[in-house]
Image (cartoon, rainbow, N blue to C red):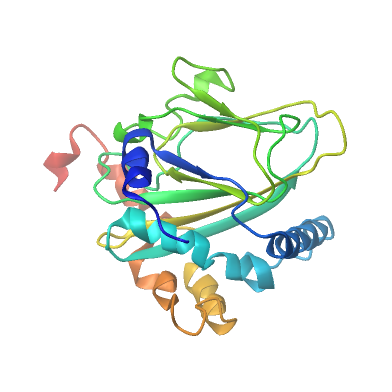
Length: 260
């Protein structure tokens, strides 16, 4: 079953995240890992390809077991795919300090929902990169780096996620403060990590560069699954942030309400 229960939705609204262990079956999980392996090889040899061009990673952006759950969180409202990132991390790799990923310039409200889906193809076992989350912080409006000074520390009320089955996902409100704590390893564990993101329609969202090309490739390669999920790749829902930053920087003085 790909849908959420009322209790799931209530928990997400209150805490800002949901965990689904072992969501992907073994075969799908292995195919995705193979794509990530190829991606990392290509990066080492400077053969840069957009992630949508990798067959399993592209399809992952419209994976029904993920998208249908996101649809439940959107409560019937339309939404689009924002991005996909993928890589693996090895023992001893640096972490990611406390931050949130809600895409807004500047941060002033949370009127529309944006979610990130963290995917752990090899699960988590406490050896490489624990996931830290701070429940409830998605309800507050703050800059992406508001907690950065705390680096990877446990904070009052924070939770550590370091034990997940292969093929698990964590859906987080994009405004939730979270971190990846560096760990020294302890064996040959490789931390496969993918994140995809989705945002509610109704406003224009800041995009990564080349969003039109990314969405064109997604549709051409069948990521829409015979049209069922074509709505995810609607470029009209985004704006290119760099085109507006100079104007914003000029006007960003005092209260922005007076600049309207």
